[in-house]
Image 1 (tube, rainbow, N blue to C red):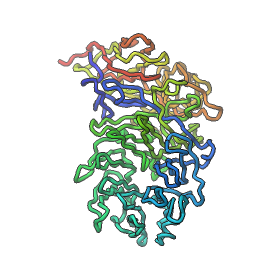
Image 2 (tube, rainbow, N blue to C red):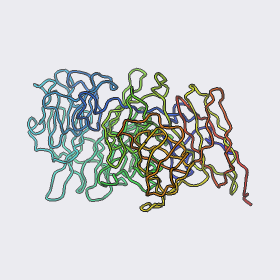
Image 3 (cartoon, helix red, strand yellow):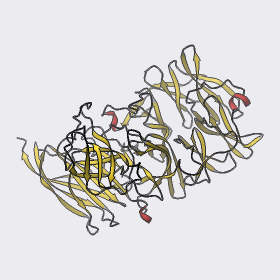
Length: 613
């Protein structure tokens, strides 16, 4: 007999390889809520989208900030245009800003000093800098503050122009051109609006992509122009030149955050780097690292898709990261990831869905998303609020239907009108035995007694490595997936890859029914990777989307369902394997459904088939 979790009922995941920690993969799982148990996570539901009034121009919101620069204490969101909430509550009604001269090419924003009794909001644009609430223009936009009021040369068009504030000093990233070689620079604006253009000049071949400020330092992430590793520049804001320069593995510093005055950065290769005093060292990684994937668009390698500049938020000692999984990743899913710096636990916790808070339950998270933006986090008394901006596939197809949205957290414990109902799963690492090979016989599961009759736990196992693609164009290790269309809640049509059989699992990755997993009960013909066939599954998706929005991305794998737990009167149950499963290891997939579903322990029962002698 062997057990999971292995040590002190403390789940550890996700780590590289098949045996690191004891959790190999998660989707919509919380490892912190109930210490000693693995819990079903919360989820992100659409708060508002581009179909709502005053949001027809909504794009992916890259940053959220709270200020009273227009004389009202409210939240602002930036995504090309400027959007704002109706109150100081981030989870509220939003609308596009309609103040005269509001920017329509906004790139980044920061508050800087105050006037007229309110803060000022500074917004970098494509070639200029705008400001809201200038002396003599109370609560109004000055669209060309940089070029007119401050009388500076226009910023270089087509660049990101990141902005950050260290105490009372603003820093703005820019690029100046020296013949054919761009040179990155940093402009500064002090508390009196005195400008020093090109205050800091960066190494040739690099341009500023992100800027973060700790208590006494700017940390500037430089993107390589000529294929070199990225750089992080440390500057105290007063020295004549920058203090130090550090190298990161990867060309693009996508995102970063500060914890306890220590900076962390994430590159397109999927590594999380921590500043250790003399260098930045990788301390964790997204699963794509060992899959030889990167956070770039398959069809446009220069387009970064992984984590937005402000896609990380720190809440005490927990980091929330809004990440987009590459379409071909086996172990990664899009949504809100949690990173715990002290335990190094790193896992997918909340899916980002396609339904509104008051709408029909269509799915439990989309992966991949089309684009991910920023995170906004707020606390009101004991209330925790989390929002994010991005673009998802309303209809996943060769020609998809996209929709821009603002999502807000919906707690899994919320049973009113089934608002918090969710589905998620975790997969164990490879459970091994001290002998050569075993006949795995049963699993004994200990769990929290169900709080709702809607709850269930589904257990699946395999004693073989995952399915891999064999059709033309596949490479070793490729996942088996295909685009399809739901024709009913239990049937869809698709060109199903070769090797998929009745009894295998299909997981809906994105589109109608995202986050659901089923067993295949019928195939209308043998799957050959070329012919469109009909697939029938057990259970069924929660709801069938409107006609024209039923497309989905389906993932196929060799999981064997051994049973479901539905009783509300017990806290443990033995699930026998339908037939003795022979293998050198056992991998278990546990799907949690409903409200506040929690797993405490899994005991695997086996007989030794081949002893080590």
